[in-house]
Image (tube, rainbow, N blue to C red):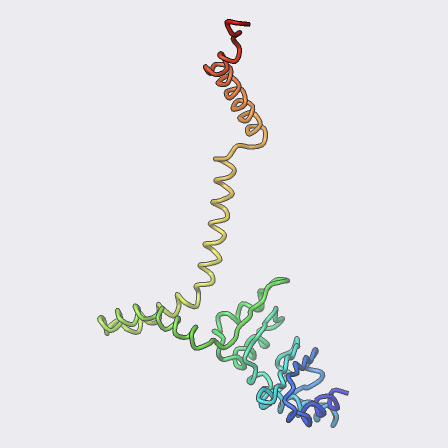
Length: 224
């Protein structure tokens, strides 16, 4: 079935109708080492679509728990990666080789992901590239001033960028904790808040009774 569907889509590629092809359990549909002829045909179509399909409007989304069993030519053509937990270091190493545009330190974390955690990575646009280059401009300028430390300065800038996610996460946690502490210590609890509201109400009532306008309204007119 997979061979027939993929083959039909490839034969009709000149129609240039946008199609997203989703292959779940891709290590069974298009394995790197097919077990029979039909599976080999399906794997061949998947590899061809991955390499050339985009210009015809054919887009491939593959899902697998065993990336090592997917043809390398299929994985290397992927521009975007959604990586959930990997169960082995061997799969992690293979993913690093296949997705060279993703920093290895990020892929290494995949073996520690919990449920609901993952890594999404992809190629960046020209505008994003320009912003990243600007962010390194100051480090580059300092490195030029101190050429004997140029390698250390640029390496430090790169490390800071790659580990920025960790600092951002830590800053978010610290901010949350500080916010909870401020609310707990500086803002009154429900019973204190009700007591303060009662005091404010009593103070407002006292001011109204003591005001000159209240006394005038309470007096009788001379002709009454």
